[in-house]
Length: 472
Image 1 (cartoon, rainbow, N blue to C red):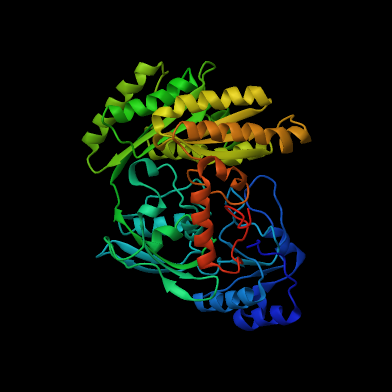
Image 2: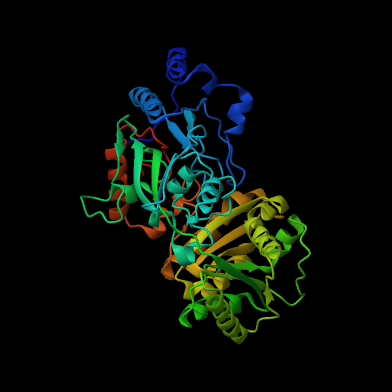
């Protein structure tokens, strides 16, 4: 089946949308269309034909029934913080924003669960839960602005994933609207469920291609009482990567273990105006956190981890003495992406390999960069093998940037595959990575995914052309 094509939105269809959700929530003005034409993916822009902002699952259902009948593309969108183009209306049509669906519906302290709508900002939910000593661990760098619904679409992770897992490990049940307009629940609000196919986990990470999530049931855990943080400098980036696997082999499981190449931290330091001193011979840092309820145990863990990393030619370890220092270190780590973007146009590749292979991956990325003439700035969630490779445009020509660079990216992904990894750990495939899917999936696997898409979305209206094209 061919991908859905841009449809002409008649005045009758626009009026139907207004009748469903109200005139003020059907937007056609140039300023709004421009605002929703981009997310945080490189420098891509695609104008939708109309932006709609429904409030309920029933309103979304009515809109999708019209779009399915008229074969109009619909692009679901949360906060627009995505990095793979998944929320871009590259075929025009309807951009459906979930920003008005922003209520935390119920916090069940007895069962350690929360029911939330998709438009709730991740950090807002986490702060509300912390007041009740409850913890929802997934914490992407954009947690202060990204929506829970977007986190579901991308199966987001973040620094805490190394100890606590990613979004899929906390989702129990989802209410969603199918592209054909039916409203369903995917599972049950229980911790164990061996009843039929696991539709809930199929939807998590499906990038808004199978349905629009309207309610989310998450499991929670008790909030840890304490955490400790240290920053470890290394004279070699590869040594820093090698130290990661050694920490786990020694029996420690940090609550966060982040890798930052020198340029990443230097640019972030300038971006947030930090006073942190970075020695001239330092090439990389590890930011290591432990958490729990017994401070004595945490101190012992930090001492043990410090003993491990000293075997890898590290410099003087900085132990965060207070909450302000912890906050400053985390602020730099979380704003690296913004710092890189402010420095240059860039492409971010979200690679992930078994963590013991990180030194090989990093070395390979640098060698490929020399071959194709690009500079890369690397950082990421080293504890779970997730390395973000930021390719800086710098002085690359138009031909290099939009031409031969693709061959370099392909070589990075082929290396990732050889190392037992894959081409996205948490950012998704969306629009920008789909041409590389054949590197990690064979024809049978791709056929199965396309057939799943056709079952959910027979007219291919929902986020068409994301992850893969049905016709290819």
